[in-house]
Image (cartoon, rainbow, N blue to C red; front, side):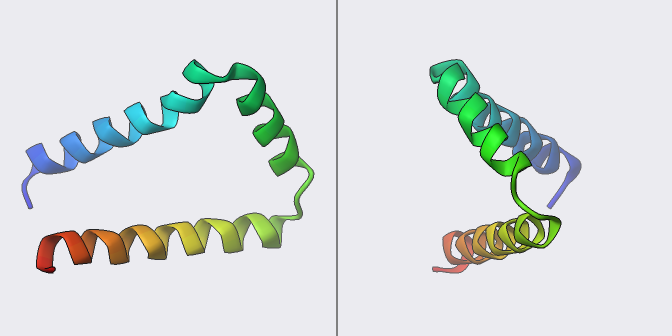
Length: 64
């Protein structure tokens, strides 16, 4: 994978991250507030599960 693909992937992440606040600012605010009430361990586990799921999905897309 070259730098071009890495930058393209980062740009796509930015687009996806911007969808919820653009479509539903109220829903985004609720989600951020709910996350601010979570303990660090829960946030860490959620992040790890999301990363592993993304890595498995990417692997499936590339090799499936």
